[in-house]
Image (cartoon, rainbow, N blue to C red; front, top):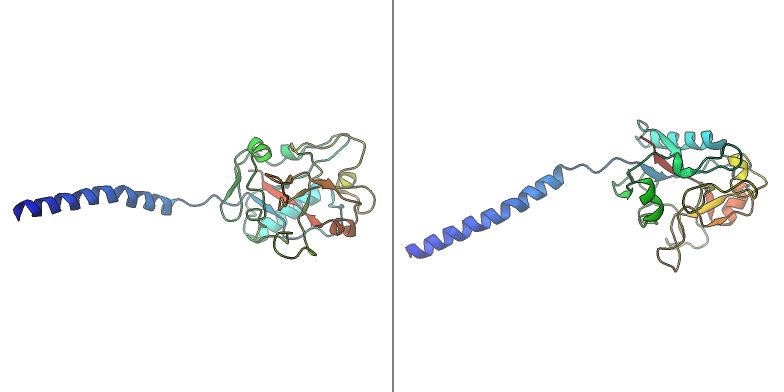
Length: 225
């Protein structure tokens, strides 16, 4: 009997030792706070086709939506490139990362990671500033979708050379021109799917042109600090 009591005591001690690290790990996980939001797709567009008021107007739209969502203490920029003299690359204006969505899921850790290992850019994780999903081809209504996002960019995050308009006259035109858009839902029968930042051009720069191919003038917004 004494032998059995000693064995049971030893077993309980052993279990206790094994359990403590697990409990410590759980406690550590509970103490860790998810990273704050550093990326979102806009819940609404500006509504004037490709005329965003230039880069400044697009950035202001990002900042306004972020502020309304409680993230106005950060500085926000739209992921957009321009063309011609003084051209700007989208990848150069969004900070250095990392960037998390509104749920704390890290979308990318750096600019390089953003453009070359970006599997989180899909309908599940590309959320708006309020944590909601956008209207996608995946969510059951093929006749209504807002999956196109204005970028004016090539797949590596750089702008197009001067010539054929890919930026609605550097985001000031709501009539002639075209806008390069990405697919926020990456809906494709390929792996990893259509590019999140450079999928196709629009047939024009009116609001109706954007809507006709599955857009609403939405933007990607990144915290630069």
